[in-house]
Length: 253
Image 1 (cartoon, helix red, strand yellow):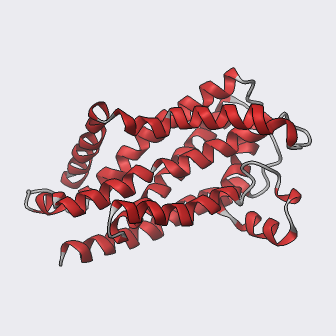
Image 2: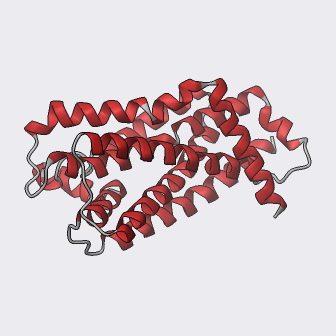
């Protein structure tokens, strides 16, 4: 219980920084609005999505993509805290060591909720509508937030292995950016060249996006929801272990 209490306190500390640094909200508010509007009105008319209006096809994809990027600030924040010695300060306090990373990932959940609500509101304005029961809509929201929490551990790991916030930013761009675009988020994968389509179909982003479409739009679910949950749990488990091990090595120096 003490570890959970410490983690919640650090999560509050991360969230309290937002009023003093409102630019932190730009990534989870203005950027999603810009992406939804631009893709809907600039590219939407040029992309074929048989059986769907483009906004209905596109919104689940852009939501998953934006949630995948929301933890970006976590990687930069951890790297910055390490460089400035704040992590050493935390170690000198009577608090659980696990609280530092857990607090970061928990605060990301709040940021993901803000990003999700923002994109849904903008989506409704430009024409998106659910074709699902309230239970499936809620299940989709839960899946998105679980995926965002799993990705937070990925960003924790990047923040710990990076030598600086700039280095963390570069690694995220190289690894996460192509992962989100080579997927079914923006276009059907069967419109891609065969090799690229095979990569996109094996991409966990595609699985989560397709699962979200099945929950919110009534497309055949198949095994997508089950595999999406497995991906979320697997990513969180693997990168929580990696990030924790790296954190212990870093603070032991």
